[in-house]
Length: 305
Ligand code: XMP
View (spheres, rainbow, N blue to C red):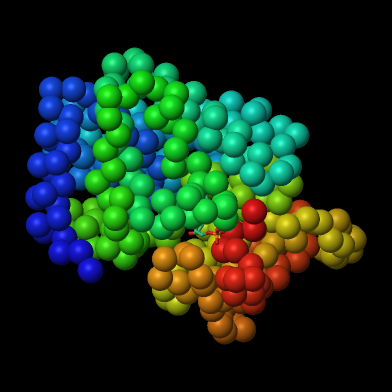
């Protein structure tokens, strides 16, 4: 287990030495990893760092406002509204890996624009150990690893947390005094809600997924899951009022894990599940069913795509 205090001191020195008189950029997503890396890099670099938050429209409910609030002490923070561009780029895309690819490409374009504007020579990334392992294998391509450096001519890439596991990142985040909503936050995939709606990404499915994920995170917080999520699967028949509806099926999933590489589906009590069901079907006329996923990883993955 990492000892956060000396780790932070050592990394601040390392980042400062690596960047020197140059300028660095970091992509901030609102998640634990990039938030911790940004806070660490900001301690080291101050206004020699430009954190860039791209609002892809695939984020969790309230994410953009949360980032704005948490990091408003960083004067150089850039918030890019790219929601329309991402949705356009994803039109007609149904294959999971193709989605990741399209999102990764669009992300690079958005990020590149800012990196060029601020004349950045260095890239700081919040990559952690499990990201590297999963990307080296063939399990899934994680779009926040690789890609960027090939396209922009950075002098160097700084990855202060490349050897840490998630629970160690949280230790570091706590030591850096990041708010609890950030340090204790569940992991959220880089491609966001796009991998929690099966098939083509549409505004309608995203709206259902965003609210359902919010409900699930809130209702299952006491279970302290590694991740709790909701995914929009497809359509099924239901009845609302006097009418038959062909509405979305939302699957709820909650898992325990240490590093995301394997996971156990959590046992959740019936009352909680019913409350989740009632909040999700109540919030959306176009949701006909809510189901609970009991599959471990393996054989399933944590995300649905
Ligand atoms: P899976 O679904 O592969 O997920 O069991 C393992 C962990 O990785 C996250 N995940 C991703 N993270 N980009 C990311 O940054 C991705 O494309 C991606 N796919 C999965 C997932 O949320 C879980 O924590």
